[in-house]
Length: 293
Image 1: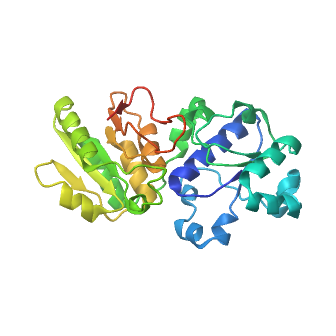
Image 2: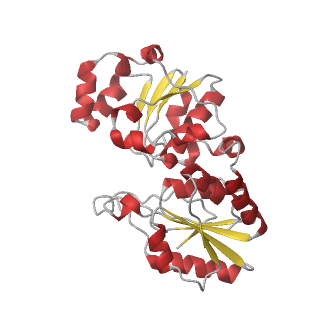
Image 3: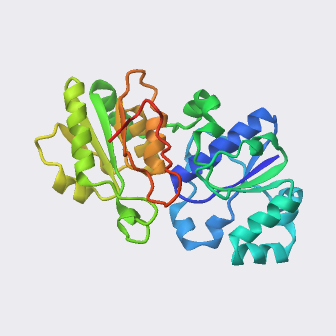
């Protein structure tokens, strides 16, 4: 059995699901999720478990399932250490635990972790190497069924236009504390990206998706052949962006998934050149054939 700790927004959940799905396939075992954070913390309860709406098999880990992991099951001292110092917890975990894997750097690829079954995985796992070889499976599973008529109408519009999804993530990324890790893309990044699409595509039609649509309306006037997408759920927005022929994304996991799931063989994907502002080895999850601006 593989148990994945599920937390964070929809983009984070998709990374967690994908590594779990890969492990369940290669080890031919069941996949279950620890959803305890969604009950413990108000912010997690508000976010909700978005991946449950997709065409996937979703099983919640029961208390007896945690018997496979001593670190989770009973050791209160270990839990206290984890709360005090994640670094010390990681060190003790590496020494003594054989079936609890705690991700110290969620941009790094820990290849050895995929060798283990009957294990608990705690992390974000934001590296495509964990699951790139099951992309066809994930594309099939990360879909909604059935679609609302309103959403089906939007998908038909997307299909019949030379559609370009423009995802502008603002929300909590406008907060100064969050910009210490992820830089907020400037307006100029989106304008340059749109101009690139206009030069390289025939009659592009831009569909704007954002958690701050009023800011978008103010900054992208009628000179653009465009539509502001409003009134849909987060999962519907992701599927809509996935079906657009091209993508302009922000430096967010939600954005990344919309582009990675795009199956158009002639797609153009534009992403920010600088993904994080962390003082470490630069990391950018964008694929090599995506254009970085």
